[in-house]
Image 1: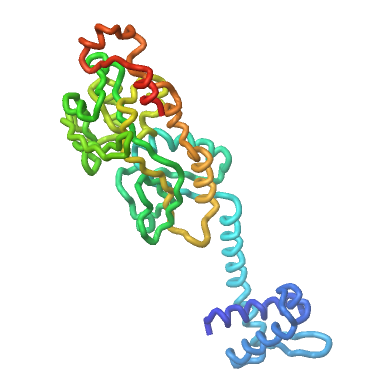
Image 2 (image 1 turned 180 degrees about the horizontal axis):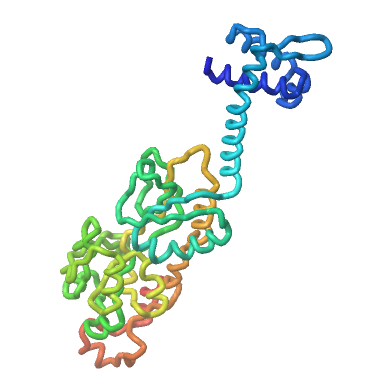
Length: 345
């Protein structure tokens, strides 16, 4: 009785009653008159009752037909309202949009994006869930997550690549004044290198040299910190050298608050991905967020502007090193024109 076919037949029967004609109902429903008649006949067989008295001039409801129409009208109206609600959601972006990402990215970059998005779509209610872990999107009710990884995993989720994520070895001008510049990865062993304990190998930094060879460096890890934001702040305070995502330190590098070190040796590049569960019917609220992320981050994120700036190797307060300085100051070496070219990307 409550099969989808029967429910559809009841909706067609109600249309015939409202229009007062099989032909007009067929036109309204964009069906043929024979299809409408077939559905009503099938419904009468299922119910075991005559619903309509048909004459050449008009249709008349039977007692059973009148009871069915009166009792189904409310349910059919509720279905129409439900379909309208879904239609509205599939139109303009609206409703709650729950976004998951790391604490660092959520604090440093997402407010710029969601601010503009909220202005453009005032019916969008954005909620940020900032945690340094991979959340279960379905179980925890997350619409979309921003994740940083090497390759998109093979899973039931959809991974949309947004932009590259670069990591940078850097330190403050004050630290460089005090301890000098490391010239090779091996020099890092004699420096204070701050370990980010939330990483898989906090005390081993993996770098790729100018010839493509992989170099792994053991650092002393003093101090050790489990927060990326605190690692950045420790570097700004001059505590040591860090290896950190450029979205955290890019603005500091461009402004000279931090100085990029060993630019010819690169940490492994990863990628930003937008991750969501829907494959076929992507809600407008998710789509506009992903579009905003792509517009902001692709093809190159704005925080990586430091890559196009000249490398800083000393602070503005420090005088240019003399030949004698190059021999005596720890960690500094005489720079040749060829050396300068190698330091530019």
